[in-house]
Length: 341
Ligand code: CP3
Picture (cartoon, rainbow, N blue to C red):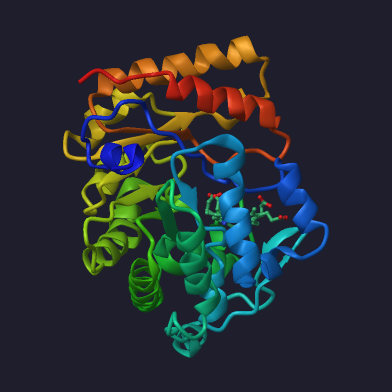
């Protein structure tokens, strides 16, 4: 069995498995070469190209899992919102403003409106046999936040004002997104995804009591509605130090940790039942190799203290300015490590 799947289940592994959030992306010259010819959304929506980009980091870096090349925002698009992705980052030109706007959203049939995702999964599975494929989606709160803000935000003030103050609006929007995600993730499992990660990236914008209303219950509802045959679920967010116990209680098998909480400390917060994923600061990859090596060794040491069940990853995505040689050195160092039994 793959060491990635074994670590997700807290089973013994010969070497610490590693994959990286945003492992396919602009820091890879092979990705930039393709992107020079087609737009990002075209890449996502052309299954052959999406499959090719998904396989690039496995071939180039030797990571232990592939993550489907797509984006969390294709789901709101399929729910009926126009999506633009350009140099400014992703934007919804007509963000949600009222309960009536929420009423108009559709719950898409993934084999219709998101068929390109399922096709990409089927193609990756046919050509990439050596490592498992991770499917993914955004968390309900994170998607709702984008749909209300219309773009990336520092404080998510519009989304917070809309949802923290209006229980009915919050429930109808988050419930509808959760319904869409259940269908979407179940379709990904049926198409061949061997693990799932839910990116509730902006979880940390909410305090613990608000996350207990607006975040965790909808995540739990999605996870508990999945028709799984052993495929692990990973939940991840940024600045979740005060939310780790809630994330661990959602029914996820693995909790992703950003670089702000040491893994041994994170273990105390999540309890013994889940594996941990993380948590090297992505900026470490911009340092000279000896300094990078020290930081990688430190993450491995703290993970060993946290006990079995560690999937090495960054605390957030690979930065576009990252040297590929540094990522290769990282993978090599992690693969030289055998965790204690
Ligand atoms: O991790 C992977 O390699 C798989 C592919 C993947 C992408 N986006 C590709 C992408 C995944 C898992 C995502 C998830 C995603 N998308 C998240 C959650 C993870 C996180 O970063 O917290 C979020 C918040 C988004 C929304 C999004 N998409 C933003 C904010 C941006 C612009 C910022 C940026 O990095 O350019 C995107 C675009 C995007 N998604 C790119 C890639 C490779 C860059 C597109 C390009 O210009 O080529």
